[in-house]
Length: 287
Ligand SMILES: Nc1ncnc2c1ncn2[C@@H]1O[C@H](COP(=O)(O)OP(=O)(O)OP(=O)(O)O)[C@@H](O)[C@H]1O
Image (cartoon, rainbow, N blue to C red):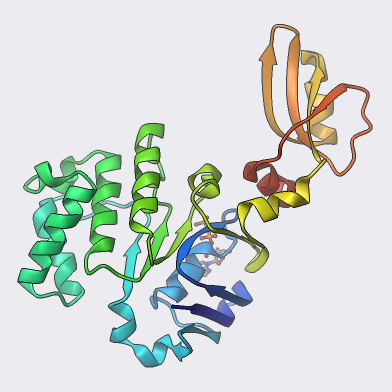
């Protein structure tokens, strides 16, 4: 299965939100990263056929999704950004409702619902109203609805927004678990959500893909550019104005600033550190 973006462009009035983007997705997890307004939601909405492109196309195995229509939509599982999802509906009614929108028969829906609520560990609250769910439970309910019908393409918009670390890890593991043989596209601001589970990272900025590739391939770019430097409290401002600082911590001897610099010839003692994706994000998007 190949999902292809071919010169995909979306213009809202005078704003080009997505600018001539071409890319191929094959089964595996993709992490879509980029600052606010980069075009992530626009790309997800075009892929999920909620928006019509101004130019370009989305193709599944060589056929335009406009031409595939409902055949394509049956293959899609979409998890929107968290919102107040039908607070008065019980989880059971919500999932049956979503299954009916996907065109599943009641008996098929029942089997899928049973399977996926167990997977997301909400099987004991099927009768409870969504309004009474915690943030993590709501996210898991949204993942369950996206999985109904076992779609080949799963689109997840900020699946861990607002969650505590334990729930975030739980959701991350769940995504890895269900990703087999599926194209999974996750848009997130939480770089660590995708750093360890994504086959490929796609970085968007101003409607264009500025980097794509496996996390390890992308990190090669930062080889020899990330340092811990050791300074005192009153030198923090100086470092902040001269360098991209991805972290500041303290130990008994003073302050440790993690900086990203093409070359470092500062006066502070330094130690090379292994780059991570957050460093790269800052390197590419920091001011
Ligand atoms: N319906 C719309 N009308 C006009 N402009 C829009 C519309 N939707 C998005 N935009 C603009 O298009 C650009 C891309 O927005 P988009 O929501 O795709 O970005 P994003 O990367 O998802 O951002 P965020 O991380 O904040 O969700 C932004 O400048 C946004 O203001």
